[in-house]
Length: 224
Image (cartoon, rainbow, N blue to C red; front, side):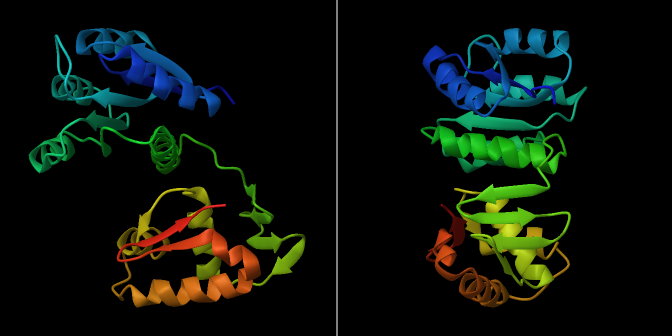
């Protein structure tokens, strides 16, 4: 498969290098721009850019202007980086069609996990049908899970839940987010449903159940 292209736009070269290094490790092709004008030129010259990582505060043309310009022609996913934790900025970003919003300073690993999650949602990233992690082998096509080579019997929802956790490794997932993705917005129950399913899933996974960490007051995180 061809490498997916990500355009990183930030006036700080150190920040661009940090993000680039982490993305290259994950097999992305990275293009860089140091201001908004350069970003627009690259965006319209290059074909098939899969995602933009865009800083808000930049000389010549700020992130909002870049976003407006790109959105006239393209629905390409955009992640906004900002030093401000300002709610108004965030609302403006979503009005302009920003997909994710990350405040500086941030963890590059989390940024890359967000990039992968967005590209999966956009069906740009082909998830392997078989995923192996920490002794767990999950076969999506066959709807089958083995742990250390032993078959594990999971219900349909438990399987979906485990798949969602594994595909979003390292990310803190709120109960609301889990409901929306695993129960697909059509479920109006409460968060206890998730807690019950997680409890059953953990017990079926034996000691590997420890990979599903509880984040008190929020939700869960899958970490090997």
